[in-house]
Image 1 (cartoon, rainbow, N blue to C red):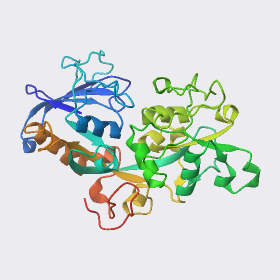
Image 2 (image 1 turned 60 degrees about the vertical axis):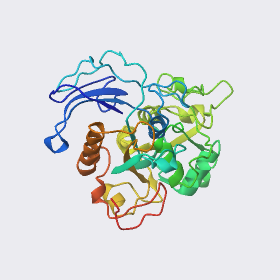
Image 3 (image 1 turned 30 degrees about the vertical axis):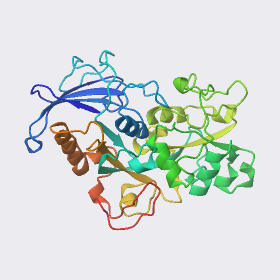
Image 4 (image 1 turned 120 degrees about the vertical axis):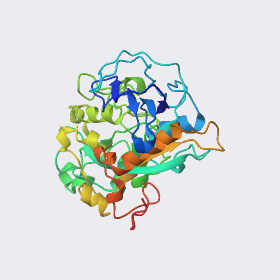
Length: 364
């Protein structure tokens, strides 16, 4: 995320893509509240994975950045992008020159990523729940994930469905994992929660059959096989966004092509687009719900963080930009986290790291 300054305007926004909430890039113009100093701003967003966001702010790399691994393809919309109070969709794809970001949103602690120095200013602003999901058409008996099953399916090119169902008749049917690339905080959180290991190389199916991250879309809405059979992503590769992965999990035909069924890890907003949320799996026998997270019963969740540079590191974020960043953090922490997760002050428990022990009290 990059924040700039403009003349005083009412809140307006423009974006690329089908919707503002699903946009790869967006531009928002307006003025902060009086409590935040009434600062006129232009806020530009270019979305990648959480780990990619931390990488960009720490390394001061450009956005977009084709040299990043995986490449960061989103860019900054120019100031002349059409904006409207109700949003202006499908703005022309005209971008600023590559430039770094001031702020990153991440669902992982900086210390859990490979990019730990310099230390960034970190405000925990919310709680992000995740779920394991079975793909379209998979039997309802593929219903529960455990950390042992997650480790097994992520570490092998297919495990028997009978491990999930305890039905010997399912032994000949395999279950495979699909998933995100190593730019993703969701991937980091899933691997930490299951004790698979955040840096461990997974075995994940590529639904396009190409093992090409630039072509991570199934063909004609159906899973396809690679040239030599089932195509598995390279260790660092996978789907570049949760929305794309959710769309793939809605695709049919995996039982014919693989043959077998698929499971994956998604944020709750993305999981709701897989068969209307009906394919969510329980985790360790517990179904996701807001109260289950708040009370510590459901463990597959992480904190959402807002991070930016501070001295003595390079190019610290200074007022008024840091004032705006802190105002954003406060607003998300107190109110807006509920739009995509859980307001952190409603938690009765906390944890020190992704996958860590969940105990009271709530530290945030």
